[in-house]
Amino acid sequence: MRFTRIIAGTVTAGLVGLVPVAFSSPAQATVTYPTVATAEASAPGVIYGDDITINGAVTTSTGGTVTSGSAALQVYSSKTPVWTTIQTDESAGSYVFFDVKPESNSQYKVVYSGATETNGDVHTPSESAPVTVAVQRKTVLKTKGLVVIGKIKPDFAKKKVVIKRKKGKKYVAWKKVKTNSQGAFRFKAPGSRGFKFSVTIPADTHYIGFTTLYEVY
View 1 (tube, rainbow, N blue to C red):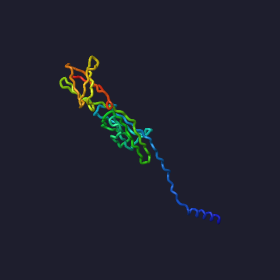
View 2 (cartoon, one colour):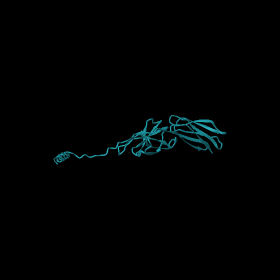
View 3 (cartoon, rainbow, N blue to C red):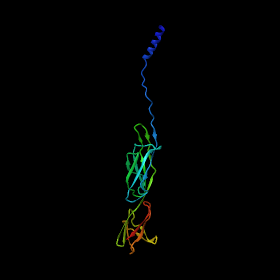
View 4 (cartoon, rainbow, N blue to C red):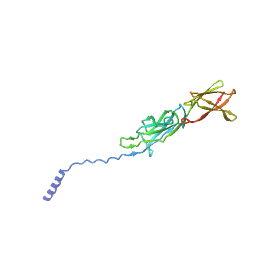
């Protein structure tokens, strides 16, 4: 009996000094997700003064959804050769940038800011590959009797316009007309009905060249 009491006392004494310990589940590790931004233009080219739309999305590199962070649309043009932010979308998962008007031949890209989610997960910043949009000068023509009056804008002062007339099934060289300081020009059409001609504007650093067909009734 004495032996039993000694052991019981020893165990009791040991329990007096114990401190309760709280147990918690291990913290969940955060994850870093590389992201991919895309951009696409509604048209590969546009007439000066008209607008286009740029759209795209930000996803993880494995195709997952991204809902946080902002997307900035930037432009680099032949007239302003520095990447410049022109619009911002705060809902980065998918975006549409409307009413984009290129001032000259341009490139566009979307830059994603990156984001840290409430659970600590990180979406890394990224940017899309540039998309190119060509710009064509705008030509306006009207007639006054047999006189054809035209104007080309922008930046087409004191330059030559190539006029071809239709002969048979082909358009052949006819004349070259020089614009004035406002980019305007005029010439007299032959006195025949159904006079068909073309106007050719050459390309330069800022704008693509083009040919447009016309007919005078």
